[in-house]
Each structure stands twice: as C-alpha cells, then as structure tokens.
Image 1: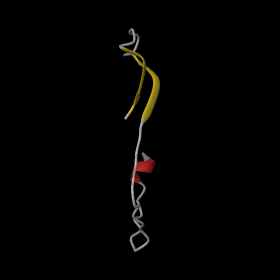
Image 2 (image 1 turned 30 degrees about the vertical axis):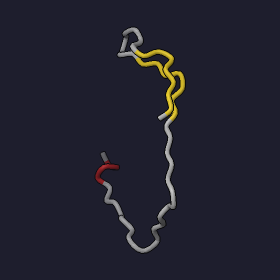
Image 3 (image 1 turned 120 degrees about the vertical axis):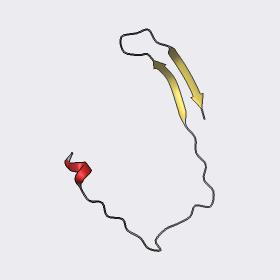
Image 4 (image 1 turned 90 degrees about the horizontal axis):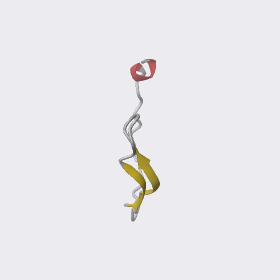
Amino acid sequence: MDLLDTPITIHTGDTRISPEKVRGEVELNNITFAYKNRFPIIKNVSLVV
C-alpha cells in the first residue's frame, strides 16, 4: 500500500509532441482460456484487431 500512498508529480509545460498519424494494432496468437479447474471455453484462437 505504500506505493498507492506515494504522492505523484505531474510535469506540465510545452514539451508535448503531437504525432502526425497514429496506427495501432493488437495481435493475439493461439489463445486458450478456461475458468479455474474447468475445460477450455476458448482454444487456440488467433486474431488481429
């Protein structure tokens, strides 16, 4: 909990930059998901968003 109680410092000023064009992508490969001690409900799923 010490980390949560640590005060934060926010630096403000004119040092910001603006990107010209932003492109993002998320890729997941061969994902398997199961609830604890259960059979997988998702198995070997891959996707790109």
